[in-house]
Image (cartoon, rainbow, N blue to C red; front, top):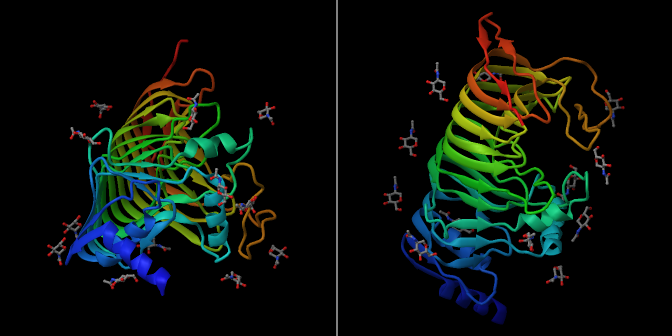
Length: 381
Ligand SMILES: *[C@@H]1O[C@H](CO)[C@@H](O)[C@H](O)[C@H]1NC(C)=O
Ligand SMILES: *[C@@H]1O[C@H](CO)[C@@H](O)[C@H](O)[C@H]1NC(C)=O
Ligand SMILES: *[C@@H]1O[C@H](CO)[C@@H](O)[C@H](O)[C@H]1NC(C)=O
Ligand SMILES: *[C@@H]1O[C@H](CO)[C@@H](O)[C@H](O)[C@H]1NC(C)=O
Ligand SMILES: *[C@@H]1O[C@H](CO)[C@@H](O)[C@H](O)[C@H]1NC(C)=O
Ligand SMILES: *[C@@H]1O[C@H](CO)[C@@H](O)[C@H](O)[C@H]1NC(C)=O
Ligand SMILES: *[C@@H]1O[C@H](CO)[C@@H](O)[C@H](O)[C@H]1NC(C)=O
Ligand SMILES: *[C@@H]1O[C@H](CO)[C@@H](O)[C@H](O)[C@H]1NC(C)=O
Ligand SMILES: *[C@@H]1O[C@H](CO)[C@@H](O)[C@H](O)[C@H]1NC(C)=O
Ligand SMILES: *[C@@H]1O[C@H](CO)[C@@H](O)[C@H](O)[C@H]1NC(C)=O
Ligand SMILES: *[C@@H]1O[C@H](CO)[C@@H](O)[C@H](O)[C@H]1NC(C)=O
Ligand SMILES: *[C@@H]1O[C@H](CO)[C@@H](O)[C@H](O)[C@H]1NC(C)=O
């Protein structure tokens, strides 16, 4: 009874709300603000706004989210700080795995018309995830520290996200799903201050329809965008990606051999790629099935990139012999089929190929027989 009252008081103090507007305040004393954030997401779950105020630092020491949001705009002006204690986060990820959840999402936002409106302010409006210590904890040649959370699931429709700004993600940034979503002005930085690699720091993992991601700035150590099976009418346009990025990817497709991978009408256009491993990448698994149709990468400025164009139909996950088949076992692939690629276009790539690990950018031919000549120069060191 006492505990219940204390919790209610905490909530009342931390969220000031009227009928459809919640303002989240921070404890400012090192305490966990995630109960207040969850209270705001519950109280203002429908036809509401939720505001995190400019310059305020919030401690998000536990996962937050809601699965019943509807027509909610989140004004993200403050800074959201994840825990710096790896062990405590791993314990939560492990507990979540025991419930058979596919992943633990630190921010889990679900429902129609959920807007995230950040700020262009350069000192406020960031998610600070303290990934550096996780990258450093990954052993040399390891495949990522164990028990990492995903940063965000954002599953919505008829919505927009602007100025999503993230420093040092632990690993995967935004799992974006749904329909009719516009994302713009994203800023993600996974720069490592050591030799440790920011493993699995995907920018957007996309699965949905009618999604556009515009004018992104993404410096990371995995795909800036990975378009997954079940995606149709996706546009990634404008902006700059790089660092140790794996670029603009389709896939991986066909890992689950019992599923027909299906991806159509995907456009990557007008993007600058700097110092990355890949710029345009297609990856599917040997033994997979499906169709990837109408895919183009156009007007790509690719500087010092190892593999500006990369296609593999024998993809596997680095660091594991993972070769998943219908019954969930992981020993070998029963056939050598592959996901069909139809009507792919790579057009107007310019720039330089990384001089210490050059890729092959000479020329490609699409299925209709038209030849696209790609112009690359070896960088002179
Ligand atoms: C959403 O769930 C929260 C927490 O269970 C609840 O308080 C809230 O009333 C729900 N909102 C709607 C619109 O049903
Ligand atoms: C969505 O929520 C806003 C309040 O944030 C409200 O003014 C608007 O009428 C709502 N839209 C619909 C369609 O209910
Ligand atoms: C950016 O946010 C800080 C608070 O962190 C504030 O002091 C500053 O005025 C803001 N800058 C602009 C240009 O609004
Ligand atoms: C980190 O969290 C673990 C598990 O919750 C706890 O035992 C440990 O004392 C914490 N370490 C620090 C430095 O707070
Ligand atoms: C979480 O699980 C991993 C893998 O089983 C294990 O190595 C790690 O010690 C566990 N960590 C905690 C804090 O439970
Ligand atoms: C997890 O899934 C397995 C296999 O489907 C099932 O036996 C087990 O009860 C599930 N555990 C939980 C905690 O849901
Ligand atoms: C890491 O991998 C590189 C390249 O394969 C190898 O040269 C190096 O010895 C490995 N280091 C360790 C500690 O395993
Ligand atoms: C797509 O979502 C936007 C809101 O972001 C809305 O204005 C527009 O009407 C939606 N389009 C369709 C076809 O529903
Ligand atoms: C790298 O970042 C970590 C975590 O923020 C910090 O503790 C460390 O001092 C930094 N190292 C260098 C060389 O800047
Ligand atoms: C693939 O997706 C397209 C577009 O949504 C749909 O028309 C088609 O039926 C799908 N094909 C299969 C085999 O699922
Ligand atoms: C190629 O892309 C550049 C921008 O990267 C653009 O200025 C130029 O017009 C494009 N050329 C063609 C033929 O589309
Ligand atoms: C799974 O399928 C493979 C190949 O068809 C078969 O060899 C293996 O025995 C199966 N495993 C189980 C647990 O059913």
